[in-house]
Length: 117
Image (cartoon, rainbow, N blue to C red):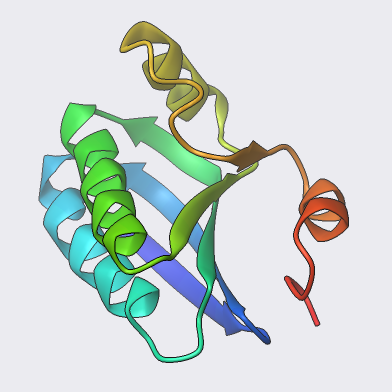
């Protein structure tokens, strides 16, 4: 089970994810991220993963698929504050650098303009 809190900003949508990111969650998350990444006027979606308690390869697959679709439309999925389980999975499958990742909202604000305006 998971919950999403969505915050709309100028050119960025911030999604706060809480709960597990497992097979049963992946399909719903992927669809939601793809919808957000294709929204008019959005340059990127930052997904706050600090609240992810458990993740598996299907959850990671949902993030990769959503990012791939976004990239094909000139948009990007950004990871914000990935939890330890997410960081471990990224290391284990050796794709740590695949996504832009930021450890805090402060770091994100400094690197990507208009994120939290």
